[in-house]
Image: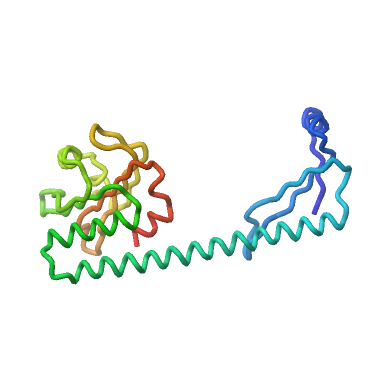
Length: 212
């Protein structure tokens, strides 16, 4: 640990006014790299070796806790992925009519993501995308999606990439929208679109789960 004394008269004056005489920084590490810093201020002129040792141990322990939490989150994500794959697999082999299977698959996506609504648009030869199914989606919104060439589903279809739009707003819906293209080596079969009134519904973990 290296003690650092803040340069600049204004900074030193501010620290003295707050009763701070010394500041020390302790790195927080996981097994591979530094992931953060614990900063400690003291009214004393320096930190004793016993205090430095104790604070170093605390910073190391924080690193262990963060790494364990991330591993647990990764395990939870893998379990969610497996559960979603099992659910979708059951839908695919179901003897139900195609319309019912599409509706069930969309409901699985809504349940996994925490979204409010979902729709599926499938590619038609030379005709762009056609509506194939929906869950909880207002009719007014589906009509606007089908008529708008710049709709998020069309953008995902053209780019073959997932598209996320926050702060989305129409007369029918508002919040966040996520478009997931169904890509195969031979082309894009269609696009699943999920919507939520929560602008933060689709975080990186959720998106990774849905893309799998």
